[in-house]
Amino acid sequence: RAAEAGGDAPGGGMHGGFGGMGGFPGGGGGAHHMSPEEAQQFFSHAFGGGDPFGGMFGGMGGMGGGPGIRFSSGRGGFGGGGGDPFASFLSQSMGGGMGGMGGGMGGGSMRQSSQRKEYNVIQPGTIVSLKDLVSKAELNGDRGVVKKYIHQSSRYVVELEDSEESLSVKPENILQHVHVTLHDIQSQPELNGKTGTVITWSPAKGRYNIYVASLKKVVSLKPGNVVLETGVVARTYGLESRPELNGKWGTIKDWIKDGNKYNFQLSPSQIIRVKVENIIL
Image (cartoon, rainbow, N blue to C red; front, side, top):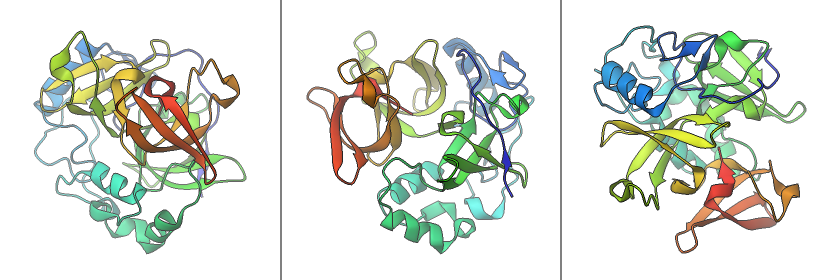
């Protein structure tokens, strides 16, 4: 049975990332506040420049540990050997198989994925971190995997990586670690077209911290410079012309490069066109 953790923490700050990050720069009480410079220094030290999410739930390959970092020893159902869980997640979101996520998710999850009609629900198997928890603040930053969505309570059941524990949490208390493409960065055009992984989101600054493995660096970017992949579930944010739509969850149907907008599907019958800057995880 899943324990319930509720409430939003006040304020912003950088949250998220990795299970039990006691050694995360600036970490205190489970909330991880860090600048892009601190994040880059941390990743260089702990991962040697490799993609820190490349071996999620799979023993972390040869990345090494680093102080205060809790890595999985490779539990059965989550794939292993350095496979990329995000590739599996994207395949699942598109209606494909679970790939490297392995047998632990079960065939039922695959069938549910291919038949799903709910565009506002994050799919089982998605890798997330807990954030902004109040009643269990010590778990903020811990990593897990979405197991299911409970409609009656509008909560997700998240299984934590390093324990048998599952929590029932609100959608706003999880951050998806998905792959993104960097776009239209005029101050650093050499970053355009690079891919990276979302590691944190700062509500106060309205920016993501994104780790770009090919450059071995962390960049801090606004949503307008971060293109989410087709099939990712996200929510509307900062809409001024139609404020009643703010906070609505839906699925990225496709990205329109000209104009930098998404076709964003809220339901089987409703697709809206929204600027990239107005959609966040």
